[in-house]
Image (cartoon, rainbow, N blue to C red):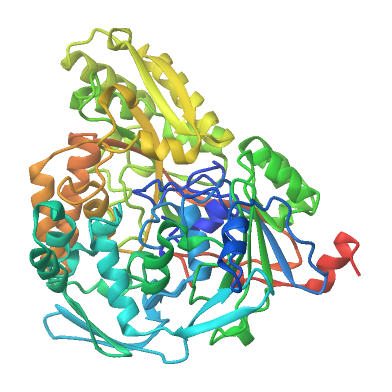
Length: 625
């Protein structure tokens, strides 16, 4: 979610954007959702503001740019596929990896997550200090970061004003304000007063009461370049949360003036290494280097051109035609790529902190029965799936969080051993199927045919479709379950699987991916599945689990936290089987030899602007002078 998502920001790029995951579009770079997403309706108008006359501005606003302006070959350009239209570029509203991958290039948060150490390091903040009890964090901001805007009329990147601590305060409170409708606001509940504000019914309160809630949020500007956070509980991981997009500074004057249109080219103010030059919705998006960025001298990429190709096969064909510099490898092309003397050298596969899972709608019959859910989860041959379908070195999953996350119990056979092959300490698939049949009988069904037709839904993607077909075949062969597979375009899909969608309109089972925002189980079990704070797409309510998460969040004892999270995993994926974790992600991409490939560990400084290109080699391959 990839994602600084920073723990998924761009990991998800490797996964999503670069084929991505759009976290939502494709599947082999399976789209990871960073989900807990929120679908935001973004205007389809590409606004071009002309500073001189209001009349002209209003006319131009109605135009939609479809064809990008040809750029001279002197600009060092990186060509990538987003995999789908970003639902939004608003940091307060983004929840998916596609949006976050772009936001990571446009905006700078207080910190980012170092890809080598998995630790937060300075970014917009030069330094920070914590109180002894870890309930107060004070960040000192650098004073050379400015808001900038791209002028669509002149092509100039114009400095607006300095970024200050007041912008951080505004951004945090805007995310938490329920009128903003941020689906990811719960991440900031660790801040004192954050949950109280976000869950309040402001319409029922007086202006004074609303202001009191806003004033009660534990974030304040001590001066123009110092911001202090007061937390509801001790949180040693808070500097990692400070890297996230929902806690980024935001430009109040533009947002309040332009409202939802503030994210369009020619309007948007950004403070990151790149600026938004073009956004032709559902077609392409272009970023260019911000020459006013404090580290501009270290950024070699002048221009990033994103297309929005949903079909992995089409994107891969564009890669082979030198139209993309990196792309995901479609499932049915992996064997060829590995054996090809050229493509095999461009192939990259490595573990990343993401998990592919199926969520059950826990209140929709017949998957409202825990034994039915356990049966369906156990009847998924995870080893067979990764070896014969995904083929990217993915690892069968028996927990939600992968092993590189603090508190993870991945691979521990105490948890859902029926999800693991024998060589990983599990029961193996044959025994798992027998256990699944027994659970169906305990639920009152002689075999799966008595369940009726189970609807399995995924977002549109060739890779997700292949996985769904394979799982449906497993359920049919092992349990005689009839499965209807459906798919929807990403933005529609995210709306369909929201917790407040009428039960008759949601599927029984849906697919999603989750990538780390920061490497701690608080970001996984607590923020994704705690029924008291998260998006709760699975409509699950387990109070023992919720209490475990409360204790783990407040504990400063690492061993106690690990034990609490292990118990949480046992409840979530084994005893209750509220979800079916399927595999832990790997990157499965190809990258051109003229590009210095970056291993997007947990998610380093957000944005492909950190890649390097041998520009002369690329121009030669493209026949440019």
